[in-house]
Amino acid sequence: MRIKINGTHFPLETLGPGRRLGVWFQGCPLACAGCMSRHTWAAEGGRESSVRELLDLWREALDRGADGLTVSGGEPLEQAPALAGFLAGAALLRSVAERAGGARRGPRADFLVYTGYEQDEWDPPRLRALRHADAVVAGRFRIAEPTALVWRGSANQRLLPRTALGRARYAPHLRRRVTGPAVQVVVEAGREPGEAPAAHLMGVPARGELTFYERWLGERGLRLRERSWRP
Ligand code: SF4
Image 1 (tube, rainbow, N blue to C red):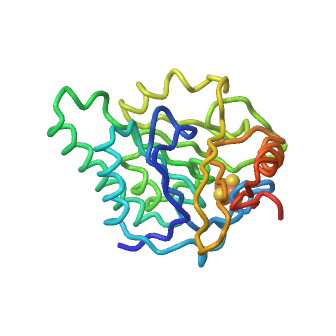
Image 2: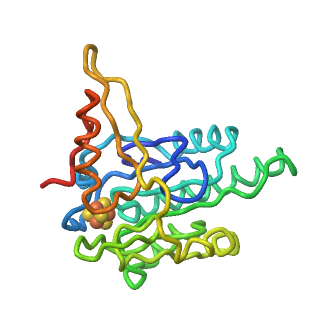
Image 3: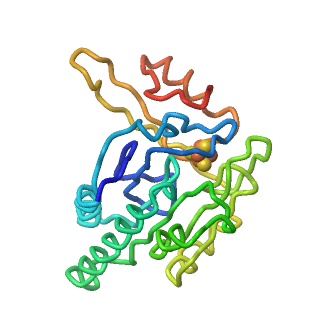
């Protein structure tokens, strides 16, 4: 099954607890003002991937001790059948890894999904896609409602545990405020010969922080690969 994605990264440390595999879906029709991920809006952007390719990445991440999987975007629920297939496969691989690793494997890896859709917008295909999600961060990004709550971009967004694992893992974070770095800077080599390295920002920056990072990177001779919060 095909999936349009914008990118992947391991280890992601700023969207959910621990070291995680991050998968960013491509395509979002919700167009929140101030969205930092405008480069993920166009459904025809990003690149073609497949459930199989993403499951291979998840297997590798589990082998490297991943604490969880975070799916963001873009809008993952715009590709609900593909998301359902990916999370079902990821749950299967998680069980296989647990059986193979026994007690050495440590706590179970959790699945966290970001969506701009509110709960009352989750139609049956979207609900099926979230069946294996242990927790969901739900709601549009509202630039006029800043928050210090960890892993959320605006005060209206809700962190919703959906399984026993999700309740256990996320209970300490429901009202927790950001105390450490909320943004992870990842520097990648140029994609073309002779192209300078560029940086990605991963996480949920506070208001004004994107401009700070842009300047900070510029002082170190680095550019942001996406400066997409600006229209
Ligand atoms: S904040 Fe999320 S839901 Fe809103 S436009 Fe950006 S990617 Fe879409």
